[in-house]
Amino acid sequence: MNDTASDPAAIQARKLRHIDACLRPDSQYARQTTGLDAVPWPYRALPELDLDRVDLRTTFLGRPLAAPLLIGAMTGGAEAAGRINQNLALAAQRLGIGMMLGSQRVMLERPDTRTSFLVRHTAPDILLIGNLGGAQFLLGYGPHEAARAVREVGADALAIHINPLQEALQPGGDTRWAGLRDRLADILPELDFPVILKEVGHGLDAQTVALAAPLGFAALDVAGAGGTSWARVEQLVHHGEVRTPDLCDLGVPTAQALRDARLAAPGVPLVASGGIRSGLDAARALALGAQVVAVARPLLEPALHSADAAEAWLRQFIHELRVALFVGGYASVSELR
Image (cartoon, rainbow, N blue to C red; front, side):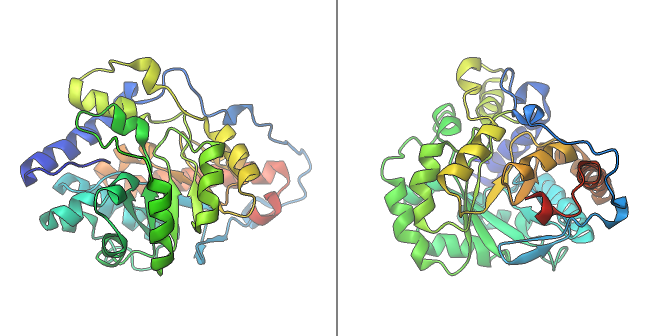
Protein backbone atom coordinates (compact mmCIF):
# COMPACT_ATOMS: atom_id res chain seq x y z
CA MET A 1 0.00 0.00 0.00
CA ASN A 2 1.31 3.42 -0.88
CA ASP A 3 2.26 5.98 1.76
CA THR A 4 3.07 9.69 1.67
CA ALA A 5 4.95 11.57 4.34
CA SER A 6 2.48 12.68 6.98
CA ASP A 7 1.83 12.71 10.69
CA PRO A 8 1.28 9.36 12.45
CA ALA A 9 -2.46 9.95 12.95
CA ALA A 10 -2.93 10.65 9.24
CA ILE A 11 -0.94 7.55 8.32
CA GLN A 12 -3.07 5.35 10.54
CA ALA A 13 -6.28 6.87 9.16
CA ARG A 14 -5.15 6.28 5.59
CA LYS A 15 -4.19 2.67 6.32
CA LEU A 16 -7.61 2.04 7.82
CA ARG A 17 -9.27 3.60 4.76
CA HIS A 18 -7.25 1.24 2.54
CA ILE A 19 -8.54 -1.73 4.53
CA ASP A 20 -12.13 -0.51 4.33
CA ALA A 21 -11.83 0.14 0.59
CA CYS A 22 -10.40 -3.32 -0.11
CA LEU A 23 -13.41 -4.89 1.60
CA ARG A 24 -15.83 -3.10 -0.72
CA PRO A 25 -17.12 -5.08 -3.73
CA ASP A 26 -16.32 -2.17 -6.06
CA SER A 27 -12.62 -2.52 -5.25
CA GLN A 28 -12.63 -5.51 -7.60
CA TYR A 29 -12.28 -5.44 -11.36
CA ALA A 30 -15.63 -4.76 -13.02
CA ARG A 31 -15.01 -6.35 -16.42
CA GLN A 32 -11.59 -8.00 -16.42
CA THR A 33 -11.28 -11.55 -15.18
CA THR A 34 -8.13 -13.47 -14.35
CA GLY A 35 -8.63 -15.79 -17.32
CA LEU A 36 -7.90 -18.76 -15.09
CA ASP A 37 -11.41 -20.15 -15.47
CA ALA A 38 -10.66 -20.70 -19.14
CA VAL A 39 -7.58 -22.84 -18.41
CA PRO A 40 -8.61 -26.49 -18.97
CA TRP A 41 -8.26 -28.80 -16.02
CA PRO A 42 -8.21 -32.60 -16.43
CA TYR A 43 -10.61 -34.89 -14.64
CA ARG A 44 -9.57 -38.54 -14.20
CA ALA A 45 -12.20 -40.94 -12.93
CA LEU A 46 -9.42 -43.43 -12.14
CA PRO A 47 -6.70 -41.20 -10.72
CA GLU A 48 -4.82 -44.18 -9.22
CA LEU A 49 -3.96 -41.97 -6.22
CA ASP A 50 -4.94 -41.60 -2.59
CA LEU A 51 -6.09 -38.07 -1.76
CA ASP A 52 -4.08 -37.91 1.45
CA ARG A 53 -0.92 -38.94 -0.41
CA VAL A 54 -0.97 -35.97 -2.80
CA ASP A 55 2.24 -34.09 -1.97
CA LEU A 56 1.88 -30.30 -1.96
CA ARG A 57 5.36 -29.63 -0.57
CA THR A 58 7.68 -27.36 -2.51
CA THR A 59 10.54 -24.92 -2.06
CA PHE A 60 10.64 -21.23 -2.86
CA LEU A 61 13.61 -18.88 -2.47
CA GLY A 62 15.44 -21.83 -0.99
CA ARG A 63 12.92 -22.32 1.81
CA PRO A 64 10.59 -25.32 2.24
CA LEU A 65 6.83 -24.74 2.12
CA ALA A 66 4.15 -27.24 3.13
CA ALA A 67 2.09 -26.00 0.17
CA PRO A 68 2.95 -23.70 -2.77
CA LEU A 69 1.24 -20.77 -1.11
CA LEU A 70 2.09 -17.31 0.17
CA ILE A 71 -0.10 -14.88 2.05
CA GLY A 72 0.09 -11.85 -0.22
CA ALA A 73 1.02 -8.30 0.71
CA MET A 74 -1.75 -6.44 2.50
CA THR A 75 -1.16 -3.84 5.15
CA GLY A 76 0.87 -2.27 7.95
CA GLY A 77 1.37 1.07 9.63
CA ALA A 78 -1.66 1.13 11.94
CA GLU A 79 -2.70 -0.70 15.09
CA ALA A 80 -5.48 -2.58 13.29
CA ALA A 81 -3.05 -3.45 10.50
CA GLY A 82 -0.69 -4.87 13.09
CA ARG A 83 -3.41 -7.17 14.42
CA ILE A 84 -4.14 -8.35 10.90
CA ASN A 85 -0.46 -9.11 10.31
CA GLN A 86 -0.16 -11.00 13.58
CA ASN A 87 -3.19 -13.15 12.74
CA LEU A 88 -1.90 -13.87 9.25
CA ALA A 89 1.58 -14.69 10.51
CA LEU A 90 0.26 -17.12 13.10
CA ALA A 91 -1.87 -18.86 10.47
CA ALA A 92 1.17 -19.09 8.17
CA GLN A 93 3.28 -20.53 10.98
CA ARG A 94 0.67 -23.20 11.76
CA LEU A 95 0.36 -24.22 8.12
CA GLY A 96 3.98 -23.98 7.03
CA ILE A 97 3.41 -21.43 4.27
CA GLY A 98 4.98 -18.04 3.48
CA MET A 99 3.92 -14.44 4.00
CA MET A 100 4.64 -11.11 2.33
CA LEU A 101 4.32 -7.89 4.30
CA GLY A 102 2.58 -4.74 3.12
CA SER A 103 4.59 -1.75 1.94
CA GLN A 104 7.19 -0.82 4.57
CA ARG A 105 7.88 2.72 3.45
CA VAL A 106 5.79 3.99 6.34
CA MET A 107 7.93 1.92 8.72
CA LEU A 108 11.18 3.37 7.40
CA GLU A 109 9.94 6.95 7.56
CA ARG A 110 7.84 6.67 10.73
CA PRO A 111 9.60 4.31 13.18
CA ASP A 112 6.61 4.47 15.53
CA THR A 113 4.69 2.30 13.05
CA ARG A 114 7.34 -0.43 13.02
CA THR A 115 5.56 -2.68 15.51
CA SER A 116 2.72 -3.28 13.04
CA PHE A 117 5.18 -5.13 10.79
CA LEU A 118 6.92 -7.19 13.48
CA VAL A 119 5.62 -10.73 13.13
CA ARG A 120 8.76 -12.83 13.41
CA HIS A 121 8.16 -13.56 17.11
CA THR A 122 4.74 -14.94 16.13
CA ALA A 123 6.03 -16.88 13.14
CA PRO A 124 9.68 -17.79 13.70
CA ASP A 125 9.86 -20.42 10.97
CA ILE A 126 7.97 -18.98 8.00
CA LEU A 127 9.35 -17.60 4.77
CA LEU A 128 8.84 -13.87 5.39
CA ILE A 129 9.13 -11.35 2.56
CA GLY A 130 9.49 -7.60 3.08
CA ASN A 131 8.08 -5.02 0.67
CA LEU A 132 9.03 -1.59 -0.71
CA GLY A 133 7.73 0.47 -3.63
CA GLY A 134 9.88 0.66 -6.73
CA ALA A 135 9.20 4.34 -7.27
CA GLN A 136 10.97 5.13 -4.00
CA PHE A 137 14.26 3.98 -5.49
CA LEU A 138 14.13 7.00 -7.81
CA LEU A 139 13.38 9.28 -4.85
CA GLY A 140 16.39 8.55 -2.67
CA TYR A 141 16.07 4.93 -1.57
CA GLY A 142 19.00 2.62 -2.13
CA PRO A 143 20.61 -0.55 -0.78
CA HIS A 144 20.53 0.81 2.78
CA GLU A 145 16.75 1.21 2.82
CA ALA A 146 16.25 -2.15 1.13
CA ALA A 147 18.41 -3.83 3.76
CA ARG A 148 16.57 -2.06 6.58
CA ALA A 149 13.22 -3.30 5.26
CA VAL A 150 14.49 -6.86 5.46
CA ARG A 151 16.61 -6.82 8.61
CA GLU A 152 14.43 -4.73 10.88
CA VAL A 153 11.62 -7.27 10.60
CA GLY A 154 13.73 -10.41 10.29
CA ALA A 155 12.59 -11.08 6.73
CA ASP A 156 14.22 -13.54 4.36
CA ALA A 157 13.69 -11.60 1.14
CA LEU A 158 12.33 -8.34 -0.26
CA ALA A 159 9.59 -7.65 -2.78
CA ILE A 160 9.87 -4.45 -4.80
CA HIS A 161 6.44 -3.51 -6.06
CA ILE A 162 5.76 -1.52 -9.21
CA ASN A 163 2.38 0.16 -9.57
CA PRO A 164 2.36 3.01 -12.12
CA LEU A 165 -1.41 2.94 -12.71
CA GLN A 166 -2.20 3.11 -9.00
CA GLU A 167 0.24 5.97 -8.51
CA ALA A 168 -1.03 7.89 -11.55
CA LEU A 169 -4.61 7.79 -10.25
CA GLN A 170 -3.70 8.63 -6.64
CA PRO A 171 -3.66 12.32 -5.69
CA GLY A 172 -0.03 13.11 -4.97
CA GLY A 173 1.11 9.72 -6.26
CA ASP A 174 4.63 9.01 -7.46
CA THR A 175 4.65 9.56 -11.23
CA ARG A 176 8.40 9.72 -11.94
CA TRP A 177 9.28 6.31 -13.36
CA ALA A 178 11.88 7.03 -16.07
CA GLY A 179 15.16 5.27 -15.31
CA LEU A 180 13.86 2.83 -12.71
CA ARG A 181 15.17 -0.25 -14.51
CA ASP A 182 18.70 1.13 -14.55
CA ARG A 183 18.41 2.17 -10.91
CA LEU A 184 17.35 -1.33 -9.89
CA ALA A 185 20.14 -2.79 -12.00
CA ASP A 186 22.61 -0.79 -9.88
CA ILE A 187 21.03 -1.73 -6.56
CA LEU A 188 20.37 -5.46 -6.90
CA PRO A 189 24.03 -6.59 -7.01
CA GLU A 190 24.61 -4.87 -3.66
CA LEU A 191 21.92 -6.85 -1.83
CA ASP A 192 22.70 -10.15 -0.11
CA PHE A 193 19.13 -11.46 0.04
CA PRO A 194 16.63 -12.53 -2.65
CA VAL A 195 14.57 -9.80 -4.30
CA ILE A 196 11.23 -10.26 -6.03
CA LEU A 197 9.77 -7.84 -8.55
CA LYS A 198 6.00 -7.64 -8.28
CA GLU A 199 3.04 -5.75 -9.61
CA VAL A 200 0.16 -4.95 -7.28
CA GLY A 201 -2.75 -6.33 -9.30
CA HIS A 202 -2.57 -4.85 -12.79
CA GLY A 203 -0.16 -7.45 -14.15
CA LEU A 204 3.41 -7.76 -15.38
CA ASP A 205 3.44 -7.49 -19.16
CA ALA A 206 5.83 -9.42 -21.38
CA GLN A 207 8.00 -6.39 -22.19
CA THR A 208 8.47 -5.57 -18.50
CA VAL A 209 9.39 -9.18 -17.76
CA ALA A 210 11.94 -9.16 -20.59
CA LEU A 211 13.46 -5.94 -19.24
CA ALA A 212 13.56 -7.16 -15.65
CA ALA A 213 14.65 -10.77 -16.10
CA PRO A 214 18.36 -10.06 -16.74
CA LEU A 215 18.69 -7.91 -13.61
CA GLY A 216 18.95 -10.82 -11.20
CA PHE A 217 15.57 -10.92 -9.51
CA ALA A 218 15.04 -14.15 -7.58
CA ALA A 219 11.41 -14.32 -8.76
CA LEU A 220 8.71 -12.32 -10.50
CA ASP A 221 5.21 -11.91 -9.05
CA VAL A 222 2.92 -11.32 -12.03
CA ALA A 223 0.05 -9.97 -9.83
CA GLY A 224 -2.36 -10.01 -12.73
CA ALA A 225 -5.65 -8.26 -13.36
CA GLY A 226 -8.94 -9.80 -12.35
CA GLY A 227 -8.95 -9.47 -8.57
CA THR A 228 -8.46 -6.28 -6.57
CA SER A 229 -7.78 -3.15 -8.62
CA TRP A 230 -5.55 -0.88 -6.60
CA ALA A 231 -6.44 1.94 -8.95
CA ARG A 232 -10.03 1.46 -7.78
CA VAL A 233 -8.92 1.27 -4.16
CA GLU A 234 -7.12 4.60 -4.38
CA GLN A 235 -10.15 6.30 -5.91
CA LEU A 236 -12.44 4.81 -3.28
CA VAL A 237 -10.10 6.05 -0.54
CA HIS A 238 -9.73 9.57 -1.89
CA HIS A 239 -13.08 10.19 -3.58
CA GLY A 240 -15.46 7.65 -2.11
CA GLU A 241 -16.24 6.41 -5.61
CA VAL A 242 -14.56 5.08 -8.74
CA ARG A 243 -14.32 8.08 -11.05
CA THR A 244 -12.39 6.53 -13.96
CA PRO A 245 -13.69 2.96 -14.23
CA ASP A 246 -12.17 2.33 -17.66
CA LEU A 247 -8.66 3.25 -16.54
CA CYS A 248 -9.09 1.36 -13.28
CA ASP A 249 -9.84 -1.84 -15.19
CA LEU A 250 -6.63 -1.75 -17.23
CA GLY A 251 -4.18 -4.58 -16.79
CA VAL A 252 -2.88 -7.94 -17.93
CA PRO A 253 -5.11 -10.84 -16.78
CA THR A 254 -3.35 -13.26 -14.46
CA ALA A 255 -3.44 -16.23 -16.82
CA GLN A 256 -2.06 -14.18 -19.70
CA ALA A 257 0.60 -12.63 -17.48
CA LEU A 258 1.77 -16.10 -16.42
CA ARG A 259 1.94 -17.36 -20.01
CA ASP A 260 3.78 -14.25 -21.20
CA ALA A 261 6.24 -14.30 -18.30
CA ARG A 262 6.99 -17.98 -18.77
CA LEU A 263 7.90 -17.30 -22.41
CA ALA A 264 9.80 -14.07 -21.75
CA ALA A 265 11.79 -15.40 -18.78
CA PRO A 266 11.74 -19.21 -18.88
CA GLY A 267 14.31 -19.63 -16.12
CA VAL A 268 12.92 -17.20 -13.56
CA PRO A 269 10.58 -18.50 -10.81
CA LEU A 270 7.10 -17.00 -10.97
CA VAL A 271 4.58 -16.10 -8.29
CA ALA A 272 0.95 -16.17 -9.42
CA SER A 273 -1.23 -13.59 -7.71
CA GLY A 274 -4.10 -11.36 -8.70
CA GLY A 275 -7.59 -12.78 -8.22
CA ILE A 276 -6.53 -16.21 -6.96
CA ARG A 277 -9.68 -17.18 -5.09
CA SER A 278 -9.74 -20.99 -4.90
CA GLY A 279 -7.55 -24.02 -4.82
CA LEU A 280 -8.55 -24.76 -8.41
CA ASP A 281 -7.38 -21.27 -9.41
CA ALA A 282 -4.08 -22.11 -7.74
CA ALA A 283 -3.79 -25.45 -9.53
CA ARG A 284 -4.37 -23.82 -12.89
CA ALA A 285 -1.81 -21.11 -12.12
CA LEU A 286 0.77 -23.74 -11.16
CA ALA A 287 0.05 -25.58 -14.40
CA LEU A 288 0.78 -22.36 -16.29
CA GLY A 289 4.25 -22.23 -14.78
CA ALA A 290 3.99 -20.55 -11.38
CA GLN A 291 6.18 -21.90 -8.61
CA VAL A 292 3.86 -20.60 -5.88
CA VAL A 293 0.62 -18.63 -5.67
CA ALA A 294 -0.18 -15.70 -3.39
CA VAL A 295 -3.56 -14.78 -1.92
CA ALA A 296 -4.42 -11.52 -0.20
CA ARG A 297 -7.89 -9.99 -0.35
CA PRO A 298 -9.92 -13.12 0.57
CA LEU A 299 -7.89 -13.32 3.78
CA LEU A 300 -8.48 -9.73 4.86
CA GLU A 301 -11.86 -10.20 6.50
CA PRO A 302 -10.92 -13.46 8.29
CA ALA A 303 -7.70 -11.85 9.55
CA LEU A 304 -9.69 -8.96 11.00
CA HIS A 305 -11.39 -11.52 13.25
CA SER A 306 -8.69 -13.97 14.34
CA ALA A 307 -5.78 -16.19 13.41
CA ASP A 308 -8.15 -19.16 13.64
CA ALA A 309 -10.44 -17.64 11.01
CA ALA A 310 -7.52 -16.96 8.67
CA GLU A 311 -6.20 -20.47 9.22
CA ALA A 312 -9.61 -22.01 8.48
CA TRP A 313 -9.84 -20.14 5.17
CA LEU A 314 -6.33 -21.22 4.21
CA ARG A 315 -6.96 -24.86 5.18
CA GLN A 316 -9.99 -24.95 2.91
CA PHE A 317 -7.96 -23.39 0.07
CA ILE A 318 -5.18 -25.96 0.52
CA HIS A 319 -7.74 -28.78 0.61
CA GLU A 320 -9.23 -27.54 -2.68
CA LEU A 321 -5.75 -27.48 -4.23
CA ARG A 322 -5.11 -31.03 -3.05
CA VAL A 323 -8.44 -32.23 -4.48
CA ALA A 324 -7.72 -30.52 -7.81
CA LEU A 325 -4.41 -32.36 -8.11
CA PHE A 326 -6.03 -35.61 -6.97
CA VAL A 327 -8.78 -35.63 -9.59
CA GLY A 328 -6.32 -34.41 -12.21
CA GLY A 329 -4.12 -37.42 -11.57
CA TYR A 330 -1.15 -35.47 -10.21
CA ALA A 331 0.62 -36.98 -7.22
CA SER A 332 2.67 -33.87 -6.42
CA VAL A 333 3.22 -30.23 -7.26
CA SER A 334 6.45 -31.11 -9.04
CA GLU A 335 4.58 -33.64 -11.20
CA LEU A 336 2.04 -30.98 -12.12
CA ARG A 337 4.78 -28.64 -13.28
